[in-house]
Length: 70
Image (cartoon, rainbow, N blue to C red; front, side, top):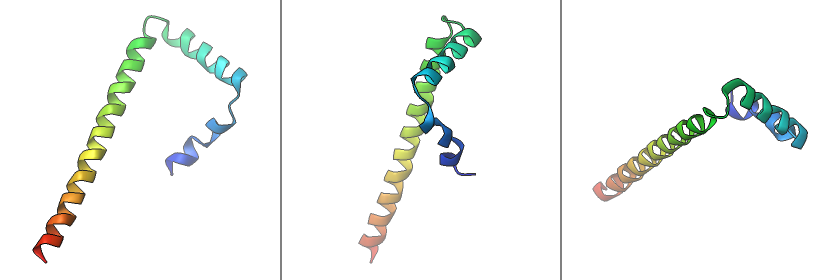
């Protein structure tokens, strides 16, 4: 299943719906845990971005090496 179809419903959220979602998150996790959850999410996104850039750079280097060998 494509990731864009999973999160397709997020495009229709308005201000009221976002307020309800934020309130539910606040009630479920509590105000003291939300910053740590956000920090963990940010670290995960950073690691994903770094891994993506590393793979991209490795592919570019292999293409350049192939061009040099010809």
